[in-house]
Length: 218
Image (tube, rainbow, N blue to C red):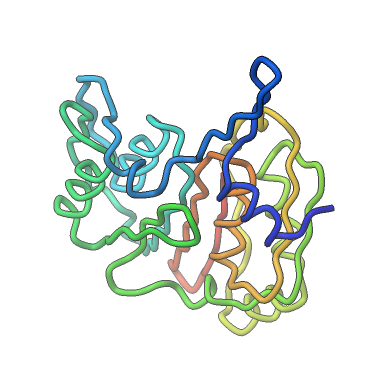
């Protein structure tokens, strides 16, 4: 079992591959390099802001996470999303320019889309310790995370209930493990997608008719 620190070091130094009896180190691209990668394609879609964010990261296999806060009115805002002649950075800048309710940032080695008004209090919950070993579906970490005593207490204090997720993503290419100590809930979600190597988590918090629900998906 490798701890989170060793996982982070592993990803930082890149992959080591033996070629013709020699060892060649292939460095993992930096975040800055990844942000300058071209998305490719020329389609145009009309999407919610979070969907446009997920599409942009998914186009180049970048890990990340998005946060969405809804009320009884829902969110009917749609924006035109097109990867044509755009780098990932340009696509992200366009997304938040079109919808200034959001901002994006690099956090914990992944990219997060957050409400401009501030991060939800629940995502700031401090986790004492969380482990998940040899998992192939990131979604399988959600229930154990929400059952942690400190997370349960935060949900009670904030009057939040777990909602029902409408979909899950496909399994990871290979099993992965993650360990989180002294992290916030958002940092733990970032650690999961970072350990998986790709994928985007989604956090939706809904407040309507005195019902306050949280849904986390991958």
